Every structure is written in structure tokens, then in C-alpha cells.
Length: 238
Image 1: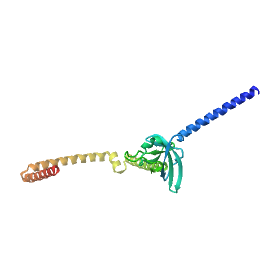
Image 2: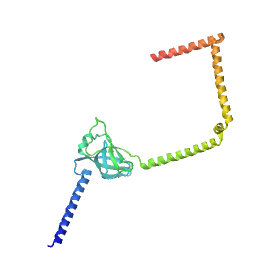
Image 3: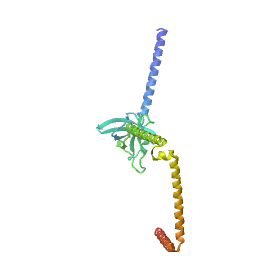
Image 4: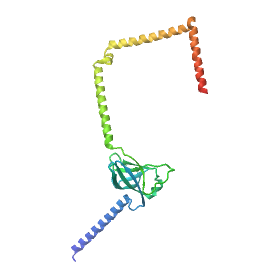
């Protein structure tokens, strides 16, 4: 056997050994992610729409990865069943009243299952138990709503711009008030006259209170007001 053949066999052996090592590592890593080597228990839930959830996606409880989606099957035209594999070491925290919802890793990340915390006094979930679900909010519906809102905001902005243009041109009552200095001065004079009239009325009422012809009327009015106030205070103190 020549040296060239020995080198070839040696390299082939290294290649096979390296490939086998990589394969074993891959099986171990994937198996660990899929909980193939960990003791698990099963839970299930149903949704009307799973929003792109896939087999193998993560399951989280209190923000921690605790399992994976094992199977997805269509029950009927309005129901999809999700089978979940959960690590057995977190079984003591999964209550029978926990609820299941579908979330995502970030805004555009992979879908995942989120199990909410249950009530402390609730019994533990049993192996194979069905948990109640919360239906996910569709991203398409959110985007449609945002588009409608943006469209309405654009219309309102355009209308406000048109109003401001008319005001700047002096059109309409507000525009004339702002642009017409004479009208603004007249309005200021009217406000001054109104204040003076109000002051005069106050002075007249003060004088009338001290006039002997009206003094009895105002005293009686003050007396009635005091009695009403006293009555309210007594009712509040009961």
C-alpha cells in the first residue's frame, strides 16, 4: 500500500469522524431544544386562529422558555388544537386556571406560546389537560386600524390648513377679527364698557343694601341663606 493511499484513508477517516461528531452534536442540541432528553408532561389548548404558529416554536412561562409546541392539528373549520410539551421541573407552577395565548419574539420575530400565571390556590394542571386560551389580535387588523386613523388624521390636518389659510386671508368672522384692526379695537372697547357696566351694577347693589327701603329685603335674604347653610351642615354631620 503506497503512501498516497494511506493519506487518503486517513483523511477519509477524519472526515467521517468529524461528520459523525457534528451529527451527534446537532442531534443533541436540537433534541435539547425540543425537550427530547428532558422529562416532560403534556398540555393542550385550542384556538380559532394560531397566527402562523408552527411546530417546534417555544413556550414561555413568566418570561422563561419552559417547553415547545409538539403538534398542531385542525379539529374543525373553526378550531385548531395545539399540543404542548412542558418541562416537568416547572409542573409545580402550572395551575389548572392558567391561560394560553400566542405572542411573538419582538415585533417581527417567531410566534410563541405564552402561559399566564394562575391563582395560587388553584390546583395544579394535570398531564394532558386542556388550558383555556386567549385569541391573538391579528396584525393585519391592527395595520388596517392604523391606516384608518392615519387617513382621518390626514383629513383633519388638511381641513385645519384650509381654515388657517382663510383666517390669514381675513375670511370669516375670526379672520376679519384678526386681520381687521378696527374690528379688534371695537371689540376691546365693548369689553371695557361691559366691565364698567358690571362695576356700576355692583356699586348700585351695594348702595341698595344700605338703603332703608331695601335693607329689610336683603337682611331677610341673608337670613334665609344662613338657615339653609346651617341645615346642610346638620344633615352632613348626621
